Amino acid sequence: MACKQTTLRTAAKALHNELSAYKWFVSVGMGTPNDEETLYVYVTSLKHNEIEDLHEYQGFPVVIEKTGRFKPAI
Picture 1 (cartoon, helix red, strand yellow):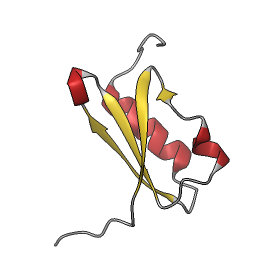
Picture 2: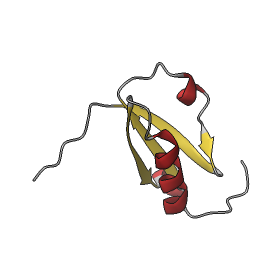
Picture 3: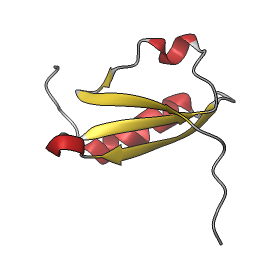
């Protein structure tokens, strides 16, 4: 794994900015499964070259999750 030179929140914001132009992109989330800081990328489809090899970003592991569009609860 690459050396982490940024915070999880900073990496999440940067990844969100990189992916936000794509229609299939929904959001980026953060979590700590098994005490390991992890980025979650939520998409409407898994069939895109931009995410096929996205397993790590700025030293953090990335999990791709297929989901629908998020709607505010309120």
